[in-house]
Image 1 (tube, protein in one colour):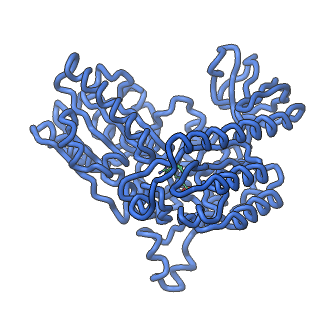
Image 2 (cartoon, protein in one colour):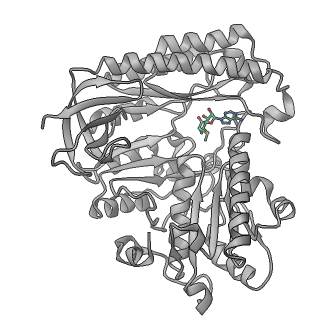
Image 3 (cartoon, protein in one colour):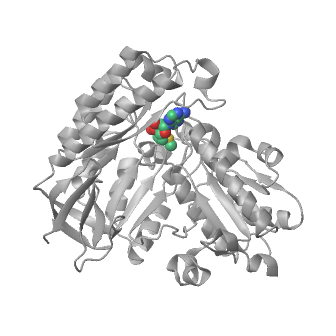
Length: 483
Ligand code: SAM
């Protein structure tokens, strides 16, 4: 996105206008390039970074070789994600040496938070290290680098939600957008690095969420996804850490807004705006949320409900806060209240001490639920997590891979079976753009989050159409528009 386009973007008008750093001729003309890895929250954070810096006169370029400032927004969730980031840094290094010796390189996000100053010691290429709660400080940090110093800010906050910052949408489709509603996580799943890299859980002011949705509708967007590590745990109590809720007076507690209430408010913004949310946690998802979903036609009937394992001993070691039976009860509740709701999951293969029988429990819970789709991983030990400190990562890599491939095979067969059941049915589809494989075809998603491909004819992105499903693969529905 070039600067001219940003200035035309109405969101720009709402940006924090007080300069955080005195503008000078060098920062004014600086072009920044930003690359994001990991979860949707990271992509959403990059849009906040883009907003903070463009409000200070920086422009955005899609061409890394033309950039004065290169940011990589990183993920620490698995070792492989960190390796990807390290490989990209090598590429930046080569560009810097060959083409642009003055290029400033900044590492943002979870990996920055995890490695802190170590990053600067290990990799001489890096100039700036910024954690997820310190993006407002970026203009000052850049100034520091321009003055010849290295710059680090990895302070985690108890308040920061970037509530009033209108993100610069970096995703190009102009139809679907992400909105972060909580930051951090209090769950302490033993395998997970998130509480250490993103801090304790805080919720964002509902007014600012509703206003962002209204602005998106005005800008032509047709779908928002509310984001959080655990959206069901959303609780607006006037600011601060969620764990402080219990210290509030009864009066103050009564005034708080929970996730079901927030969903209800956002759904009322516009009937033309579809609403999704992610990620849900089985221990926090209430029946109220399901009833609000049933009440509003524009809330998509799709729930991403990570299960992680089908075995009670492993779930306990993971500190997930529910049993296999409780998870299945939640699935029944969803099926009863929202009969046509798609459900997806996350699953981890080969967690510490997992036996073959326990892995079979995972395959059995998949057979019971028949998820529509899934995100499946082999366990990757993360430094300083409770699992790393307390348990042995003793399942050999070859066994982890074997179990993961069994989980993936099973999911593929369930996804195909679920998709086949849709042949002959009609679905409302929001068109998101051209199909990857052909410019004569468009793609969009059903409310159940299934991807649908169909002939383009005269249809355009952003339109709602009714598609009759005629064929499918495990990943895609194929059809034609009938209305
Ligand atoms: N907050 C969500 C939750 O806990 O359900 C999602 C967090 S994470 C960004 C997305 C997924 O990555 C998790 O649900 C889990 O399946 C996977 N994951 C997290 N830590 C992992 C680890 N150490 N090894 C393998 N997979 C991991």
